[in-house]
Image (tube, rainbow, N blue to C red; front, side, top):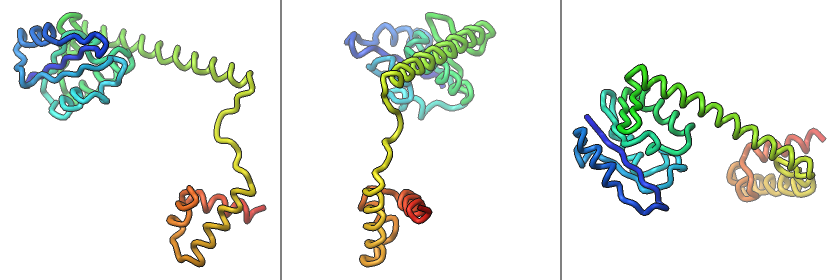
Amino acid sequence: MKYGYTRTSTKDEQDDDFQRRALYDVGVQDSHIFSDQISGSKAANSRSGWSFLDERLRDGDELVIWRIDRIGRSMIDVISTVTALTEQGVALRSLTDGINPSTCEGRLMLNLMATFAEYERELIQERVQVGVNAARARGVRFGRPPADPEDTARKVRTVQRLIKYEHLSPQRAAALVGWSRATFYRHRKSLEDN
């Protein structure tokens, strides 16, 4: 089965007529074209049109898109989406940029894109680490703030009373103070050890 996908940006308020015409020209039926009007920065699997399409794609199907950037703006998202399609047995054809993973040129282009995606990931990690280091240098603390020992002891006693006198389950009693059962047991054990 041959499917098509179009995407236009929300900012542009444009329609996808030229994309649809290109898909019609290669034999995609109107009922097999799925569309989104959403920013390409949103991951493909978070878009409603893409999700409806993805539910229908099967091994042996072909997905035709006007251009590879219709899948997404982030190279990382594009590569992971194309990889998932390929692993699912779905052939992908991009009309204007000629990327077709079933050809050696298409695989070369995807491998180059994957290399750039890896580079993009490393740049993002580097920028995040620089930001974290700068924040730490300014005295910003990361992670959960330490629990107030008196408040923790009070909550443990409350949960124990609810279990003993109200006959609640540990899970239900812990939930009443905003904890999970495991958190209650962990704090109870740490109090017993001290």
